[in-house]
Image 1 (spheres, rainbow, N blue to C red):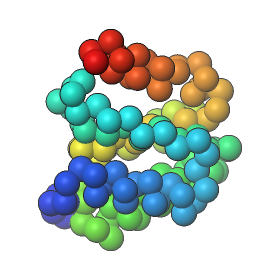
Image 2 (spheres, helix red, strand yellow):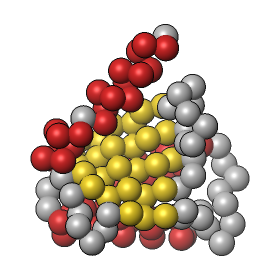
Image 3 (cartoon, one colour):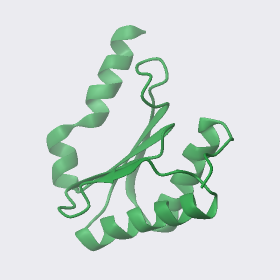
Image 4 (cartoon, rainbow, N blue to C red):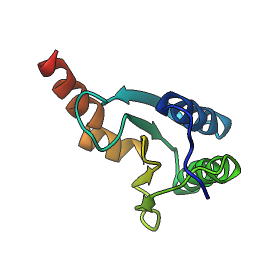
Length: 117
């Protein structure tokens, strides 16, 4: 499998389309290029159930494979409250609504972004 040669924005858009195909809830994109060297974009989305969350992961992995994009890792799949899919330039956080409200990733990363502006 080769790594996608398109810009991070292209990979971000593939992920968003995959999430929309499986009806992810509350999709949020955070540009973290100026905040970290780990990734360019964080995508946060919610799923209504464990089955829905796994379906979202399956769709992301399917699209990545079909586009020959390397998947660096998938964490949290057995538990399903918070599943992370690492695609390098894009890191996807799939969370149940309860976990999303508890961890408040959007507020954390946007707060850092605002303080550096």
